[in-house]
Image 1 (spheres, protein in one colour):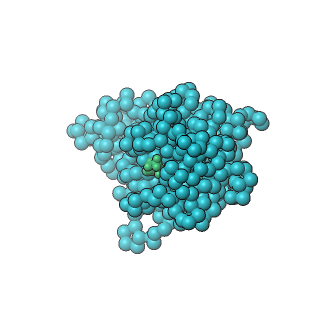
Image 2 (image 1 turned 90 degrees about the vertical axis):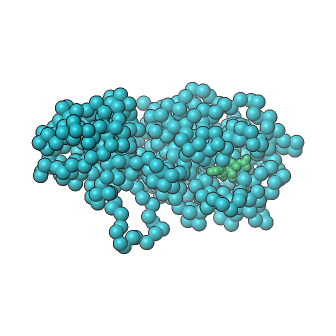
Image 3 (image 1 turned 120 degrees about the vertical axis):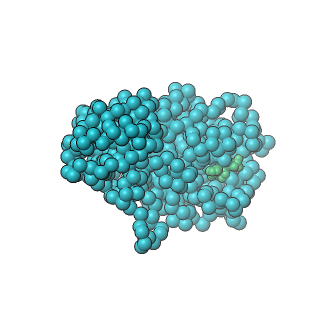
Length: 496
Ligand code: BES
Ligand code: ZN
Ligand code: ZN
């Protein structure tokens, strides 16, 4: 998809359709609405006056253009001016793309003037993100529809009359973010027989070469040498080999402590010997969403030339039952030196993350953030509208809460109090891998906290947010790419 800022008079811009935002307060007498109103002989003001368009969030009216310039003008209500924020703009752009699909045109223009108090660069970024995300589809495993194929929007032009440099910068950032999130989504959608650990490593390697990241991939032999027994214990039941993927972006000064991003790359979670029930098991291909988000975020960080050292780590494995699989009751070692009694082999994410976090901690990070589809319990706690965030440093947690708010990928803090740790006491090992049903997401995070040493660290449980119905205008059902945008926003917020 081509996403660009176009510095020209919107009324003269040749496009099949241009989207204009209408707030509840708008009467057509100012800004882009007024200028189009003039070109359209007062039809916009009349549409507003007659109440065909009231500017409420979701309202939509399509008008024909004036001959030259845009062929159609779609007025999209965005609600009250004071409530317009970056997320409203993402949705506005998504709705513009959906309108283009419905009208069967492949190009769309987005006029971002008049969108409340949102700063220009932020507005342009949000518009480019929304359009780039909305246009994405996962089609690679289906024959093209011969009769009545859906329209693929291939170009979105961002238009605005403000500071050109800011608008251009925002558009470039938004386009890179959308590409990164769409890479995450593509990897998430690929089924377990395609997206194996080796495949994830290959895709990370290909991506790294295309944007200039350094990449290292450990095979199982190397993991054994390192002492990553917890990760290897999960992969034991599987014919597919595990991979440990490390991506490095050297955008800071040499020796600056890196920001470390860790993502669970469990390419299929059958539960292992503690086998999951069959209903819905096919969805467990998305158990690599955290890893995919780290790969997507690293691509964006490289493309935007973020001025910081950032390391992305993706431990990747399958979790299958077999004669060689780890069994409930087995005690395994870990890279950090702590022994673990595996009570339930379905609590495997925390095992592969234990080694990845211990390995990441050795890099002496400025801060380390992991994301993982870790527990079903987070869906009970927060549903599908927020990820859980837990960590050993409230400043870092606060930064992630804010990055969530800005990026539109929200998270909500759960407590990581010492009391919960007792649920992980084991008779035979240093700790066990499950803490029972009460506070399942918290005990899972408590388990992870045992492997980060004194690193400033936080964890995002994305089991409820990485995949879903895709009800927002810029989403589709299935892979949501969460928390790629949040990770990028957090790293950018730390580097100014
Ligand atoms: N991958 C699952 C968590 C999950 C559940 C992700 C639903 C997405 C949707 C994880 O490995 C798992 O199985 N967790 C168990 C932990 C339990 C055995 C302590 C769970 O949540 O049931
Ligand atoms: Zn599991
Ligand atoms: Zn899992």
